[in-house]
Length: 105
Image 1 (cartoon, helix red, strand yellow):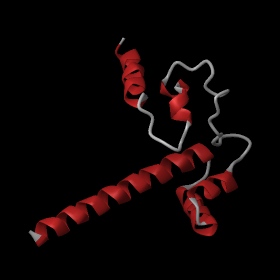
Image 2: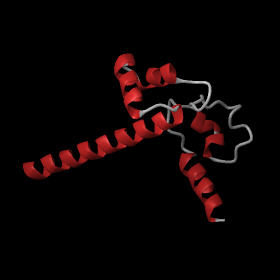
Image 3: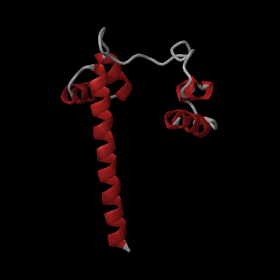
Image 4: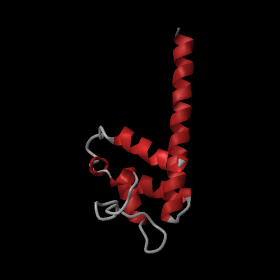
């Protein structure tokens, strides 16, 4: 049983590394910086959010999502519950299903 658990933990660690790598790639792309530059900022700032804030630029960059940003949006971000990061909204599943249904026609 211990071998299976170790193998399982190893798989989880690998998945966690892959997700972290993809997250850093996406955030870096949207900030208009290299992954190395973003990761250096994370080490320096010791915070994911502070690293992003330290790299915000005028051109290609990330912007906070506010209720005004999504006022005319028909996608899942328009749901008021999604705008509250303190909890996972009950309506998120329905919102994503409606959003995906829009792609199917």
